[in-house]
Amino acid sequence: MPHVFQPSESQSQQFDLGAKSIEGRLAIATLVLGLVSFVATFFEGGHIIASWAGALGFGVGLYSQYVSETTTQRSVNIIGIVAAFVGVTLGIARGGFL
Image (tube, rainbow, N blue to C red; front, side, top):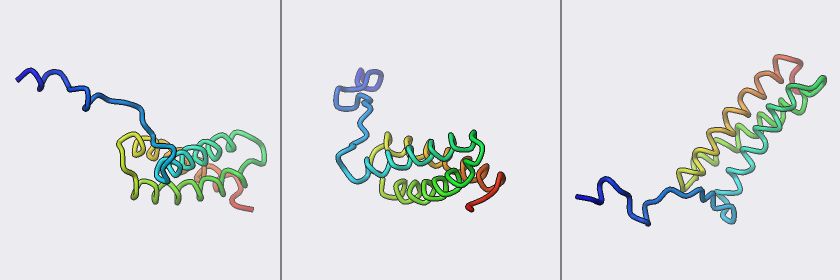
């Protein structure tokens, strides 16, 4: 019963995004697009970048979430999707895509 209270070495938690796989790259792209979209909302005239990067990040993030393989990828996807959603929403509210 000691294995219940202490995880084995194969079950230990590691931050492995798998950046060499396509799923890892999609997760990184989602996070970057989401952060660009969110940060762009703080600048005057950044609504265009925020709107486009947010819409693209939201779409890429949903697909990335669909094909993700690890819990770390899924966590990064959720952070990126939320940031992209907030960025595109604020971008549209402040002037839209054009």
